[in-house]
Image (tube, rainbow, N blue to C red; front, side):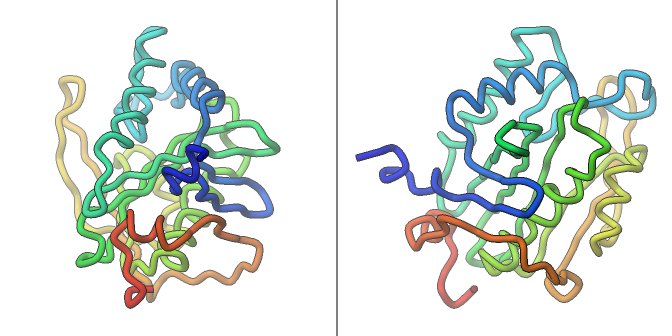
Amino acid sequence: MTLAEVWPVRRLRVTTSVLELAVPGEDELAELAIHAAAGIYDPQSRFLARSPVAGWESGPSPQAEWSFLRYYWASLADWQPRRWNLVMAVKVDGACVGVQEIGAQDFGITRTVSTGSWIARRFQRRGYGKEMMRAAILHLAFAGLGADRAESAAWSTNAPSLGVSWSLGYQSNGTTIRAFDGARQEQINLVLDRERWESRRDDIAIHGLSEEVLELMEVSAASR
C-alpha cells in the first residue's frame, strides 16, 4: 500500500486556474522550509510584527528551516478528528510559493474553521494571496466541508492581509491585544459566514475529498 492509501488526506488537493493547494511531499517540504528561512516580510517594514504564522518563524538558518518542519510534522502527529490542522503547499506551475493551512476543533459541532498562510517574499504582489489564502481554501471550507463560518486574524499594521480579507467579505470580529517581542500588538479578528461567502467561480475544484478524509475531519454527511 502507498502512504496516500494509508493516510488518504495526502490525496486532498484544491485547484484553481492559477494555482494548486496540495499536501506537500518530502521535496516540497524542503522547498518550503528554504522559503520560510528566507523570510516572508519586507525587512524595511518596521511596523509589522515578525510573528510565526502557518509554520513560518524568523531566525537564523538552519534553525528556521527546522522550525517549519517541526510545525508541519507536529500537525500530523497531533491530528485527531475532533482537532486537526491541514498544512498545504501552494504551488504555481509546479513550484512551491507558500503555505496555506486550515484547521478546526470539534468541527462536527462548531462547523467553524480557522486559516493561516504565508507567501515567500519573492512571490508576493502577484495576486496569489487572494487566490490561495481566501478563494481556494474558502471553497474547500464551505463547498467541500460544509462549514458555516471561517475565522482568521491579522495584525492591525498588516494592511495587505486585511485588505484581502475584507475584499472577500470578511468582517471585523473585535480585537485581541497580544505581547510579541517585548511590545504590545493589536490583532484584528476576522470572520466570514456562509451567507456572506459567495463562490461565483467555476474554475475551483476539490480533489480527493473521500469519505475517509471527511471522517478524519469529523465531517458528517448531514453537515455538507
